[in-house]
Image (cartoon, rainbow, N blue to C red):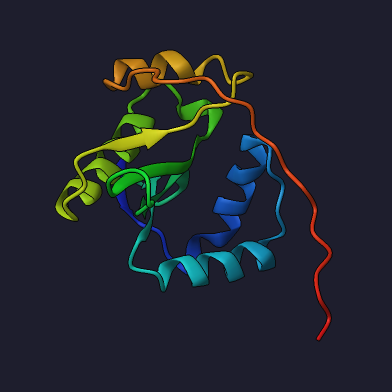
Length: 148
């Protein structure tokens, strides 16, 4: 039996381990700092899915966005489920929890971006009712931070 709840700082070691599965290795201390900041912001939510024994086997980070050019909406910023628990409803539970949270905040739309190399995630989102609306390129530039 899997259940979904909001993440806490006690979940940090498992969140960090699952982030590595997602392809984003992060030290627990850095993740704890990020989670602390996110949990303090009303427009962010992080849910975890846990086994009957309390083991965190997946997480989702969703955030509400208000942009100048489009109406307020919610976006899935990250979603990962332990490989051993995929296909057992963990991902569905996490997405549904985020959708309920978003709808409860008055958001009419939910978005998700999925890397083209994550081919296994595309059918999952389509089964969840998401439609592909565009393909785009992502760019990144490293900035020089000021040391004032």
